[in-house]
Image (tube, rainbow, N blue to C red; front, side, top):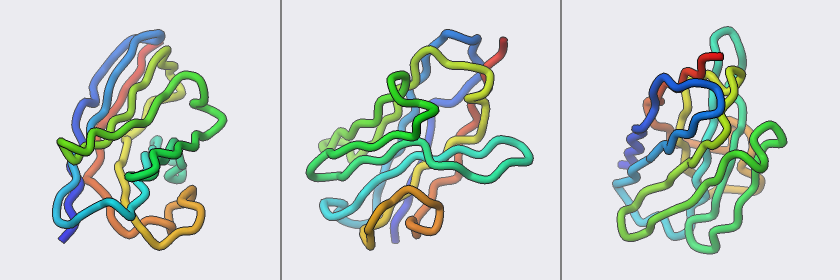
Length: 124
């Protein structure tokens, strides 16, 4: 059974950085794409970034491009989301997700497996 466990959230000020981690377990992820999503209060869950586990091809939402970086450490079965120059509008619960069905991995329905989420709060 696939398990995804996020960590690294917290309360920071605008302009600060955070690194989120997602430890994946339960199967071999070589064919999987890993994604990060976020959900602010009263809003839909939105795509943030994704990465292919093997080829490491990345794709970002326009709202985070140039500020966030997604990466993997295969030796630790971990996906990271480095978030720099954080803004108050980045405040949300951040979720890690995984799937291998394709094809685009940019909407919630593209992913079958989800973590429990980690809260990121950015104060102005």
